[in-house]
Length: 382
Image 1 (cartoon, rainbow, N blue to C red):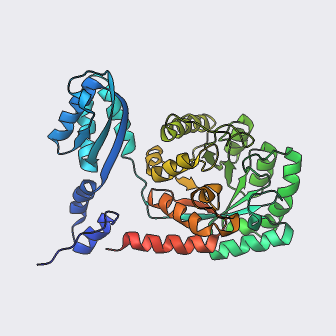
Image 2: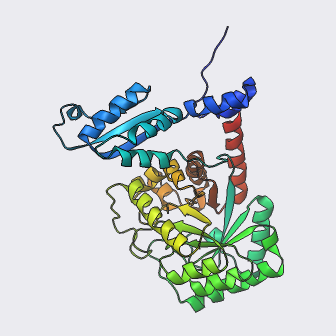
């Protein structure tokens, strides 16, 4: 007899299939293999004591501070450690418990939702029609833009994101008319060459005028860094039944990097998504993508926390998009000019993919398709 330890990132379903375990057996075993570490803030101390006992009774555990058992403080933070099977049992137990534990049960229930296929990925290629985007390699006009778009599709991009206004820190907006004058020639070329049949196209804009023009010509995604702040954008998106990317940003591009502060960045972004998803639904928008907004009103530490805990946002049930391509957070970790940030970009995006992001917005399509394909193969290997 011989044995060896599998990687903690192994796809257990693939291992079980390799072993020849029945589908019924897989349904029982897979939930036991998924470990959840759930941080709970401001839990009433009596509730913490009950939750810990209930967790222990089913083989899970709750880490609490020493003051919990004596109830010498009114509120505590706690760490719940449970696999998916135990989590589901605990959700049922807490429904009938006092001290706010029914709310805890409801919150836990929302966290166990998982996407149907967490191994799929799409690469969203970036094209900028403005001359002040932070990465010169993404700027194209006319036939050069068309050629670059075709090249990205050939390299494996399934979404192309076109933008006409810079949103880098400190950038200033332009009029809708000016923005349209930048993106219209490229939109017309895309339409003329029927490229919307080969990939999905997104407009990175919060201009109702520009979005109306793009959506009426075959674009299908609204990439709105203001997350439907303008009701007119919501109406245009609903009119064309477009998919909307809801991105989190603190303040606006002119001020967003002026010492951004959060009590807890993950919870702040979570609350923002909840609000904007409800707004989108009120306007009749059903297809959404969530983007935590790396670099949009965040410090390096905020960005790293959001990437590391990206899987938290899966509970909303919508695809997650990440866009850290060549951003300055890489330079803050290791001083590197924009042109040399591809390795750092790949490291950040692979981590986000591992944590559930399935749409990767990138300047370098070919490198990303290769890296993600290899990473996916590693994940699926027994």
